[in-house]
Length: 382
Image 1 (cartoon, one colour):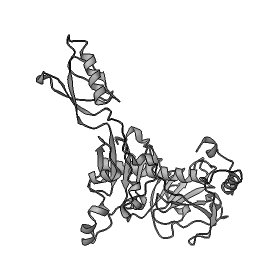
Image 2 (image 1 turned 30 degrees about the horizontal axis):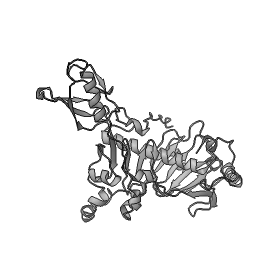
Image 3 (image 1 turned 60 degrees about the horizontal axis):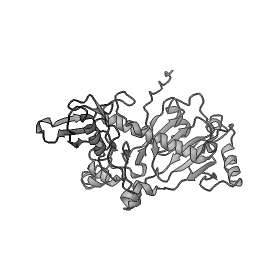
Image 4 (image 1 turned 30 degrees about the vertical axis):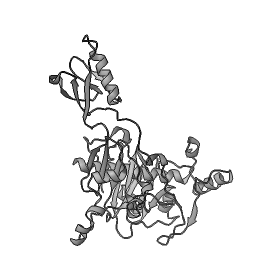
């Protein structure tokens, strides 16, 4: 989607529907779905909902052909051939350099083993008469890692030394609890730790990948078994969690415990209300699985004025308050989903590190584009 697609418009009650119809009349592609008004059974509000389809890039299903490149933290063993006493274990420093023998520091960041070997031999040749030959062995991978978090046997951070599929990665973590421990937990009468495939996700570069975990695990659909890349987040939440997620332009984005009768107004109030600049005419409610979500748009400002009905929520709903209006409904949905998965990844990584939510000292992969923002202090209670 280009910049024109996400151009900001002046607020108005029905602008999103008008923009969608105008775009269709102008000959826009059908990839931008329009709103279809419906009346949910649990609310008197007339809303609009859209369902997106799951699409996998065929390239993701092919194993990467690039050779492994070195990075900070990788463990190496270097030896001058013919001199066994020269064998040295070293680590690629944070600046991407290694230190060996007479060398003050050789930059190997981004080099393959073969390229690094040649680079070291060329530098050593400056200090000895005969061109040296070295043996360079990779002993440990630390620069390329993936996160596997949530309801797996051994959640944690795992090295990505070779091409690895999603199923292979989950197997490396001991398998999902829904697969590996279902019989044991069922016999013990405990099922609250099973994974929720509908809300499981892969996060890459700060964006949600359209991987359908339900199709992969429940139907054996290998078209969802993508190859992973460094810094990917894999997260499988608890199936029985009963929370509503309030995100976006609110004072304290958070997961709100679900209770009977919870509405959009109540959920936003539990996040201490909206902040200055929030666009309250198009508050988004996302429902259903992440791979095939449904979306409703609530005119929150008119609800507060008593001019529009509120919407009743369900467990797992995502309530997203945008910072600005957008032309297409897919932009709202993408923002809501990307914000949700980024927040879930941060929270899961924080729990894994044993730090309080939002605390400092959490390792976040550079390529993930996930950022930890300090929480806004809630206003004092009267």
